[in-house]
Amino acid sequence: MVISVIGCGRWGSFIAWYLDRCGNKVYLYGRSGSVHIERFLKERTNGIITLCDSIEIGTDLCKAVKSDIIVIAVASQGLRELIEQLVVAGCNGKTFVLCMKGLEVSSNKRLTEVVSEYTDPGSKIAVWLGPGHVEDYIKGIPNCMVIDSECEEAKSFLADNFSSDLIRFYYGNDLIGNEIGAAAKNVIGIAAGMLDGMGLSSLKGGLMSRGTREVARLIKAMGGNELSAYGLCHLGDYEATLFSEHSHNRRYGEAFIKRTRFDELAEGCYTVKAIVSMAADKGIEMPICEAVYEVLYRNKDAAETMKALFARSRKSEF
Image 1 (cartoon, rainbow, N blue to C red):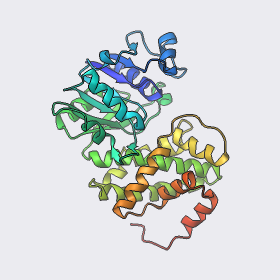
Image 2 (cartoon, rainbow, N blue to C red):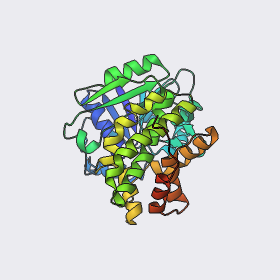
Image 3 (cartoon, rainbow, N blue to C red):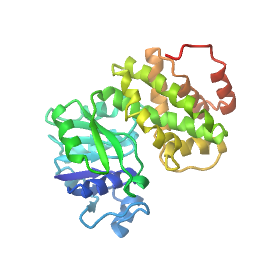
């Protein structure tokens, strides 16, 4: 297959590497002037992953949209602008695969909803979600992920053709739940980093249990299957997000508490705004996500916020 990957950051470059490894002809696109693409064009590496000569690298968006399958791995808040550019370049009838885990903060929309505003009826939109870090994959450490879509044909085709000995794909059956669950796990990841920063890492067990429970409530309220919170999109991604040294969201939360600098993208710091807004609209209690929001955006003291969570009225576990 001929596949274009749009986005040459850590995850996008890995996807290009992986799809090439699976035997596809890959074009990796990056914005002209981007530090990431300039380094790849000069050195074919970003210091983590090295791309084979079989992968074409460039800055021509018109070339990128010629592929039948367009895989997108950019910052979630920049997706709408990118899709507008793709429409101008001509992208009707394509299969779009979104590999980001976030929500559009300005509208509270899921990312497939954003894309569907611009695509024609002949286009297909899917998501590629689940656990795993580039640093592990390139060492040959396998993992499981999920592909979901409202189009059963696209879902089956992508999962079947993208699977390998390195990634086992499952067929998703709840697009709403998978998108919300994947986005929300980054918020829980920030909370985990905050616990690390406060020296309270032993509380991560409770964080995982109660975090999953509140995300399940939101998924159900939004029309999804609450069981999706316990699948690969959310709970299945906790090890990679709440514990790994490679997790941007965990590291962001830890750096925030320790007041140290962290310059990498942490999607959860944006997503939490949408999550809290959606929960308020639906009348859903999400105390952990709300606590993260209070600390990040209302300058609440993290230790005092933690005490307030423990002081909440007693509740049944389920």
